[in-house]
Picture 1 (cartoon, one colour):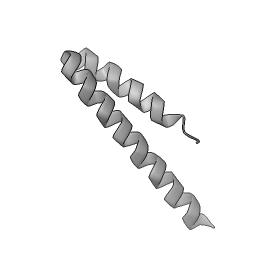
Picture 2 (tube, helix red, strand yellow):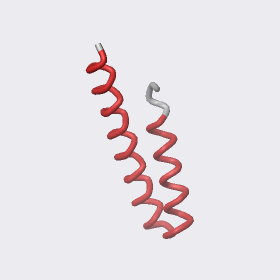
Picture 3 (cartoon, helix red, strand yellow):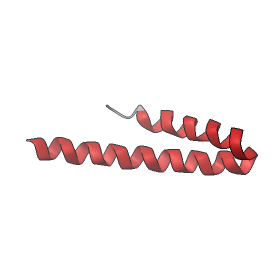
Picture 4 (cartoon, one colour):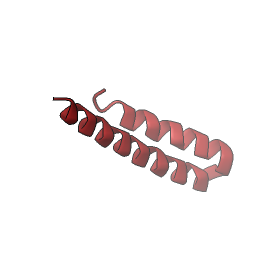
Length: 52
């Protein structure tokens, strides 16, 4: 998994927010994408550690 989902979700949120809400939407979309990426990354780490 690595760190690739963070910038992907950041950019995806930015583009979706820009399309739906202009400049303010781009900021909110980027923030939500970054938070979602961090949350999913943390969940992945917890699941990998639990599996051992």
